[in-house]
Amino acid sequence: MMQSRDRLLVISPHLDDAVLSCGLLLSANPSAIVCTVFTAPPRENMSTEWDRKSGFKDAFEAMQARQREDAAALEMLGVQPVHLPFCDAQYEQTPLLDELAEALRDTVQVHRPEKVIVPLGLFHSDHTLVSDACLQLVTQMRDTAFHAYEDVPYRQMDQAVPQRIEELTKRGYLLSPVDDLPATVSQSVSHEQMKREAISAYTSQLRAFGPGAETTLYSTEKYWQLTKRQAKTQAV
Image (cartoon, rainbow, N blue to C red; front, side):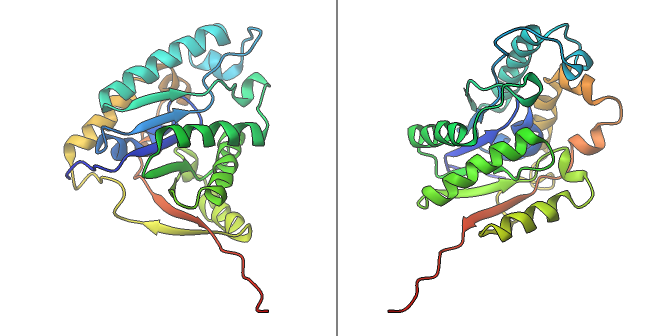
């Protein structure tokens, strides 16, 4: 597959989601930008179950190490990282929806991408929050093309994808499956290898996911074109 010249901006809730869900797409677009939302440690140190499963004694150690892992993974793919200063849900300092939407809108305006790739918003509260913030941008920035990616590993949960699509459809959004956006395994073995090597950089998160995670973490990427239905105007 030839590398795309489109300027892509991928919105990632956590420091691994973009590579897990869009690694093939990123490997084919080395000029892409990955904006990760939840990259900050809590104001006061703490120890959470997920961080302990990841091999860390506390949140400060966890976030420092995870930022290093993410930098290594994105460097392998040749893409540019952008970090927003928000804490994820486990640190109990979740940002407000409008606050997050404003930060994401500023990021899009600064980088002026041709396409913005956002999480569909499956299962995890952080993913749903980021997705809902991005949906505000879909409404406000109609000159920008938006696509949604199916969140790995949550896309494997029974009915998670159709239920979220049904919810968004009821809220006035239109989602159409896109077949030509990602690079697929059959199109480029080199892109597949790049994605696997990038995922391997997230040592702590692979530890937390546990044995047998490969079947969910290396699933086929899936994308949806995302638009907002135009309100009907009444005839005068």
